[in-house]
Image (cartoon, rainbow over the protein chains, first blue to last red):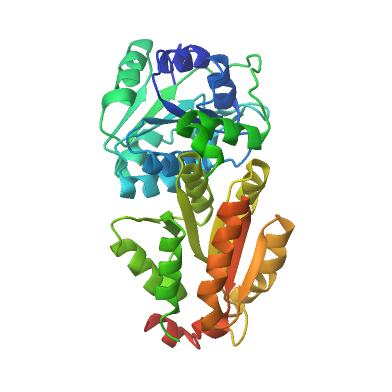
Length: 196
Length: 174
């Protein structure tokens, strides 16, 4: 796998001028990546629940059909919830994008190789599951067009972005799950969030 | 009282449930059909039960109420994700049709069925048992109030005695 892309740069580009984008990040490096790009209430970074990031994105996208929802997760996290690609393919939410930041490693546990290092093609899996579009991204030029698609294309959209396997400093979001949930709902739903 | 699934459906509607995740079970057949036919509800077929924990959590983040339908054998699949529900205090309403209880004919269903209440309680889920058809809908109503009113994870266990499947032949003919 040849890539020269750094994950933090990719995520920073994807979240540039994000407008009202709702972002769910999977357990591990992608949660730190979205935090490095700027912690905000409309981020929901996961500290556990490995394998369920895409499904949280689906529930959110169905509940908020007028908002764009982006799930950013790692290859290991996505592999654990691969069935959710089939579930999303059945529902076909037009406002959902799932982007896998693929370093082909379990980055938090010693950089062990994942299935994608052996060639498992998650973009093809997503396409076979019924996503409207799926792509592999290997250069920063393609990242810019992916960002546009996340905001404008009919979903569900899938992308597998190949990045360098690198050990980089952690940038940690708040870890209190109740806080993360409450601040997200308040930012999205307003004061009514606390009264429902 | 054979129309208890219809009564559950009306209860879910009244509770404002808009997303229903399910892994099919013979005991939930009628309820799933009702949810699928409802234009105001989104019935989401899941490939495994824990997906429903993510679905309903995401729904709540977006301001919508969800419910999860499954058989007791699926409860074990959810365990780690019940940790997320507890840490974040997501409301969660689960309706579980029981196997491995009275008159079970498949020995492979017994371990998970018998362990279901203990597994839920170990993960901080409130368990309500419904042992007759008449008490199911009121129990679901109470569970929905506890889940959405008090931000709790609640499971209603619908007894195998109510569902009344007696054999493999009986199950497949439904």
